[in-house]
Length: 425
Image (cartoon, rainbow, N blue to C red; front, side):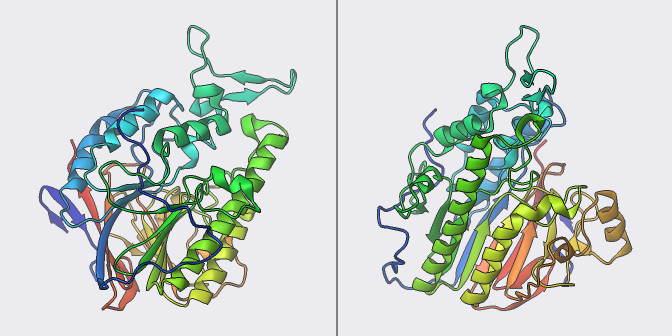
């Protein structure tokens, strides 16, 4: 471990900022089209962050205040093509307010490279929860007892209504689909490229894909974590409302179609690899039973089938469960590595220190066993981004098509990455 201005951890072996991603085109998504022929690059470098900034209470703003320094540390990485945030811009113990979202928006304007963002559950799907400032279903009255301040005002935007908060997120961060602040990166948005047989897909402005000159196809999909794909009844009601059920159905179908679109485009463009960004850890039951993961199976099935058909490396980055992890949950008993403590060097999950940490945080040693559906996809890999706790961390990821690295805590085929804990205080 090297400790300088930044600590690098590697395995020993509506202001002026519109959409934080650039440029869609208006072609239909159901017909794959090859991009213009250019001299191929062999390398690309990017950064991944998630579940940051976090607070332990509505008034804990320590990470929020340190966020500009965190952003500046990423800016100092001279060769990054973009940074991806895999969702959760605040914790599940902080309120969902417009002021907070605008603060994040203004801080992100400090990035000197394109920012790709896929929303997390804490920004919208979980805003109904009382601990996030929403409210609680009253079984006696059948109404919602909303969280209010001392003056009787709702503390959350729209009383924590998830769809209103998702609309707010979209209006702030995705107000101009296909354009990024100060960026030349071009992406394709599902809001602009959807099958007209499924018109509700045009709401999914946050789902994007793009081809990197090095031959990697990147894709984002909005899958909220921690709530069995957003099916936990809002406000603790006995069942989902028709509005909630319709949202789950529309969003899930749109995501499945977008994954198909991305892999079809990867084949059409002869991509060398596919990288997926989303929030949900679909293998982490978060202390509940595996039954609380059933609604994620549809996405895993889709990723598994498309990965096998694609036949080249597929790398999934996600957040949600907060502990850094490198593994393949689509092969039973595949090697895995985790950080046994925040910021620590990742070790094998079978190591006693790792096992103790996994038990403490109720995390699976073999994630396959939480989704034991007969998968065997050796060309797939997953990285869970460190989040929530200090030290804050970002990944610096390198894709190099000229190498084929072993699967370790910090490498997979053409991909390798470094965990960086910058000093931000």
